Length: 389
Image (cartoon, rainbow, N blue to C red):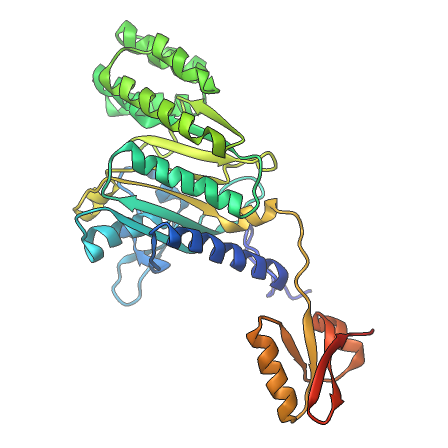
């Protein structure tokens, strides 16, 4: 019987040196972009009490979250499935600022099920959150940052999808429908199940009924907004949402390959409160970055704050980039030579990788990933030359 102790759980993978190095550079590049934009880095723990990690009303988050019992307190702990609730907690209670707060983060999150086709259950999530501003300017800021980050990483041909949960919420509120019917309508819209939708809207007032039936058809380019104005009720909330979508779409057009509007997109409906957005790539079935406005999440921590943000999985993005060879290093002999040690220090200070050949075995040199070596030229002079096989 073969020993399988080295096998990992399904949809959990190691990251090997070449990929790990590149992902780390990606992480550093995005965090630097965010730092220069005024976003301060926070590092919340991977493990918290379950109440702190579950967004109220979000059954999706509950299903995605690993839970365990704390042997010290007896309480239920959870491994984070999303960093956003933690950052909202930090903003609400640890920082407790009254004005605009910009925070960013990067770290692993764990899902009970894969996040999408061919995806891992351990995502390396990086993102940014902006608190304390409810205007369109902050929505635009985080969406621009998301597109800038993707461009910085070399992700080209990005399609940006925009939606607005306030449209469906306004229709549900105006119709005074029950929570049960609201959930059923939400599910039908998410699946674009028009047959189920037709059955559910029977009995609703004509304006609401026709609007709900129209939502699954209101997707496509920016021209969808004009069609929506013609078929949706002239409610103030609906008009405001369409105006916001139009302004954002027009301003972000130069940054995205193309922009789509989907008025039946209700991702995160139970905690998002306004505009939602997602970036897509031709080589990925799943969104490669997403976010939205979630002004009510802070209520779970006793201090609701206007908020909007985005996140992306660096491991997923890495898979979309062309292969890249790991930079080669300089091989140094293992000798007690002060001039050699000084040269190694000098080269490393200049950013060169210098690997000391501890074994000195010619047959194993290829494993050290070097294409040059340090060779002694005279008593105190060491020079870098090409490494010959």
